[in-house]
Length: 289
Image (cartoon, rainbow, N blue to C red; front, side, top):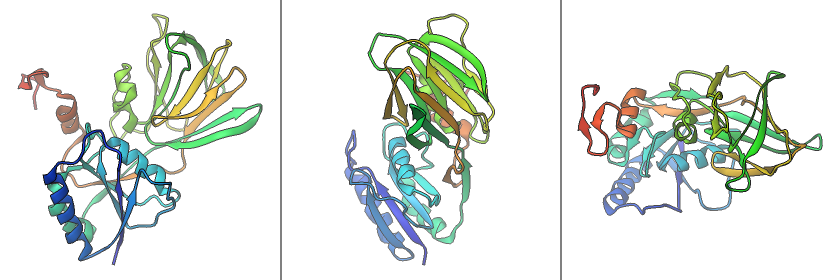
């Protein structure tokens, strides 16, 4: 009998609808006939190193990020079930969960492995903070409306220096998150690369940059300022003038269950309303596939 870890987000922007609650309860009953269910509350104190054959994440993208952090060393595949606000990382909707359970129990699914980032912050020559990130690492100003002066090196070679609000390093999965809002490129999930996107650079020449997945990136400040380092939406550490942020590809990525229901392009049409003449009104335009 397979073992499954269920992940829930107890803190939600919008509560589950009654119909969603009913469908989730029905899915649990169906699942319990062929699997041992382990429930994990994502808002409770951290429980890590969970072991399972697969996991089901009910919520939005934030819930999947939280589940990824909870997995620890055991990277079993996760199925994202959309019950949040955006759901770019989700594979199915809550309405599809009950009929998907038999496929999960049979092992009738694919697994897409997506790269993650390993970040290490050094202070006074010693490791201060380290983290594994699924979406992105962000270096930003600590004081709103004040710029910071950032320096970036790739594989030991200085690449850029600029004043601005910060810089985003994102994975292909993270390219549709903060980086997208800052004008960064959208990377196909099958591409392995790191997207580098400046945040409001005070210069006309700086543009987003894509580097190979095995690039080793170092970030630092080159003028006195107060910066912050964020990882997947959480503050990791303040950043001072003598600190260094080292980023590289992590040894293991996230394993997401793929059922073949939607292509990456279908996700873009659905989530970003690509191919519509008037996205605000949802009307189909000539570019709609």
